[in-house]
Amino acid sequence: MDNRLKIIGIVESKFKSRAQCPKQPDANIPPSKLTIDQRYIDAIDGLEVGEDIYVFTWLHKGNREVLKCHPRGDLSKPMRGIFATRSPDRPNPIGLHRVTILGIEKNVLTIHPIEVLDNTPVVDIKPVDFGVWKKGFGPYIDSKIGEKIRKIGERAWQRGLISGFNGNISVRFKDMMIITRTGCNKGMISAIDLIAYDLRNNKKLSDGDLSSEWKMHYEIYMNRKDVRAILHTHPPYLLAAIKSSNNFLQHINVYESEIFLPRIGLVEPLIPGSEELASAVARVACSKDIVFLKNHGLVCVGKDLIQCISLSEEIEQLAKIFFLLIPSTF
Image (cartoon, rainbow, N blue to C red; front, side, top):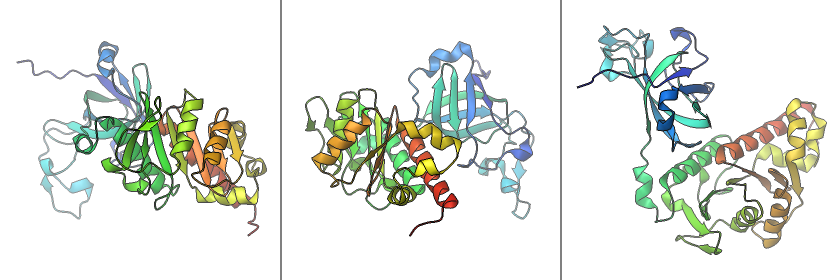
């Protein structure tokens, strides 16, 4: 039996000492790079941006003689056996980290969040099993797609970009769009909340009521073959900023506003869910990745949902800056 570990890659992180490493993964941790050894580059075939994976690390600075410790280094807590903790000090210092792939460039994965030292060795990668999704879906929706939509909905809700039942999310999958149903809370999406729609034959494939804005998603996909994902949100600062000025970004002298201005289009108020709104947004989205819907919300399109949520967060942040710099007129 060959019981030797093979190092398949190295994590490049911002943490240079154990003292700098967080005790647990945190959303505020900067993304890290996982460089796969060229010998194993074929092994990452099939991994996708937005996918969750388990990364197994070799915590090379761990003390292999330790059997008990204070949980999370808190001396006020009684000592426990290290198998009841996540301490890096253990007989076989294997770390287990659930992370999201933010980017893939040849043999380098951008991952988040992971709380390890710089140059920590990696010994294995495994996909997260989404069996719970598979039980709820019909034959058309891939479980990975379902998990990506769920995560983006949860993040948009956490960031205050959507609330209650508003907003909608979709992805292009093969010749279909997978879109949230009407009346579902995007912060708590489950398998029954997603519907498959045949783009080629223009018909619904799954049970349930489509989002009220499904026509808008459909028209965008029909007009832009490069778009793989669409996120429609109702960001409060943005809605207020547009109410104050259609061109509010021109009033804030920050670098980001200059970058995003050429990518933004505006649609004047139209009835939500109407064919008029769907057509108007699709026309603007033919040349713009970011569409302001006056008195309504924001539509961002992109190659994946991570790009869509990132654009949405950037725009809402710029709207916040607008109100910090310019006295409100309300």
